[in-house]
Length: 173
Figure 1 (spheres, rainbow, N blue to C red):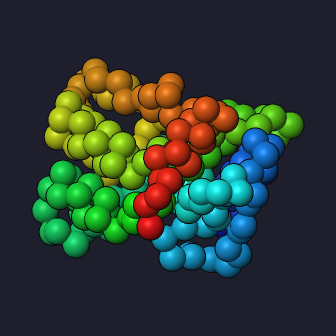
Figure 2: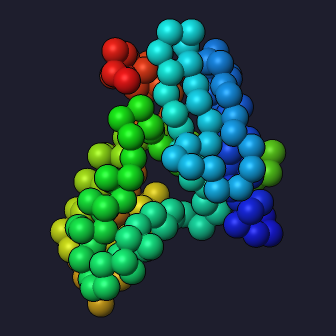
């Protein structure tokens, strides 16, 4: 993919397609930089807002702007500030294109903002990070040297995972 715009556009389309394949109704917000979410899914009863994050390099930069606002290396504070921007009915769908042939589906994950913030804080041996890695081993000179950052298997976008999310928001406004 050529640019970040191509990655973001393809990711949003792939996420919408996957949710539709699971039999959900999907409403897509079009245009760049939509507030809070990119699409909405519903099973006819409950609904969930989905913020789609695409990547072609194995990682998603999430909290760099929050870290810059804090003016120091407060990775935990940046994760907390990022988390505070998300509302209860919003989940994140991560789409990964790295090493995926053009005739194959990308890897897709679904997570709550709290799950993501927790992962960001535990990264780099507990120091924290601004980047969520799909599968990455820290180098010998890095903070948290030798540790592996990996998205949990339970985050994989499955019918069961989606049903759990929709059930969790049931009754919440």
